[in-house]
Length: 98
Image (tube, helix red, strand yellow):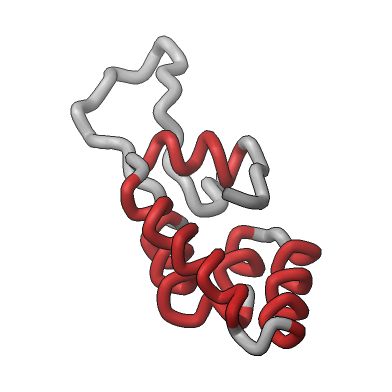
C-alpha cells in the first residue's frame, strides 16, 4: 500500500514492532515552502489545500505582500511540531490554517 507522504505507525499484530522513529515526509518541505515562498501559497498547495492556497495568493496581491507573514509563521509552527503531531493535524486532520 502506498504511503502518500507519511509513514504508518500502526502495529497490525503479526509484524514485529521496530524502534524506527516516526518521520513525516511532508513536514520539512511544507515548512520551507511557507518560510521561503509562502507569499505564493505554495505550502498550502503542497499540503493539498488548493482553495486556501488561492486565498493566500490573493491576500498577498491585495495587501501588497503584508499577508505573507501568515505562511512565514505557519512554517515556523510546522518546524516546531513533532512529525506525528504534524501529520495528525495537517495531513490526516486536514486543518488548513494555523
